[in-house]
Structures are given as C-alpha cells and as structure tokens.
Length: 146
Image 1 (cartoon, helix red, strand yellow):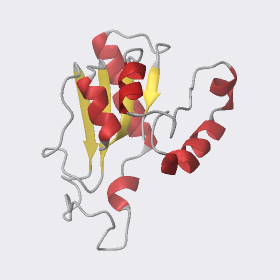
Image 2: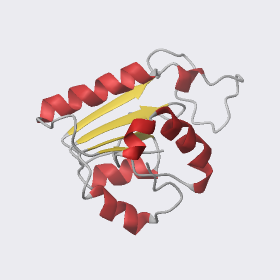
Image 3: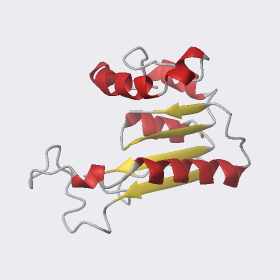
C-alpha cells in the first residue's frame, strides 16, 4: 500500500479488513513512508497496481507495471490516463453521470456518487481480468495504491 500520510486512515481500514494477508507478508504498508524515488524502486517488484487518478497511479504506469487499474471519479479518464503498462483498465462514471467529469476537489452537488458508484467487485474483476489477460498468476505481487 502506498500513498501519503493523509491516506493512513484509509490504509488502516483496508489492512484491518485483511488480517490474514498482513500476518503472511502479502500486504506491505508503505503509505506515508516513501518518496517518489522509493516508489519507483518499489514498483520494480510489482505485477499489478490499483489506484485512483493520482501520482502513484501514473508512476505505476511509467514503471510499466504489467496490469494497471485506475479509478477515476471527478477527473476525466480520457484527459489524464496513465501510460506505459501492457494492460490498463480505467473505471469511471464519466459516461453514467451527466456531471462528469467536473474536475472539482469537492462535489458541487454535495455527493460522492462519482466515486462510490465504482464498486469494489468491479475493481476486483478488472484486476483479475487484467492478470489473466497478461498471464500473471493471481498470487503474484500486487500493489493497491492510494
């Protein structure tokens, strides 16, 4: 898990949901503990990455991580897609919500629908399909990025 120090509460929630992976070392929490150079070094060992439209997602693409799943809320996936990876799947509500993309940090309508409409099963399906498409076994190293 990578992200800023501000991502720590979310990372803690995710880690608490998967205690079995913490005990066997399958999840490594590097949130708030890596700079850009260290993130590049970490990504040399990663087969897949999932994250929002953020610097870590674009760094993952630049590192040519084989499978990349991007989650786009208020930003337009056509405008700022990551590049470089063999399999990139971008999830967005852009074609489902008339207000998208708004490019606002805070929703002018007072909702988070653009993000909450993208459900975890959809993200997992995109990840697993990407892994299968490029021939990576599901137990290989994964990175969930904030």
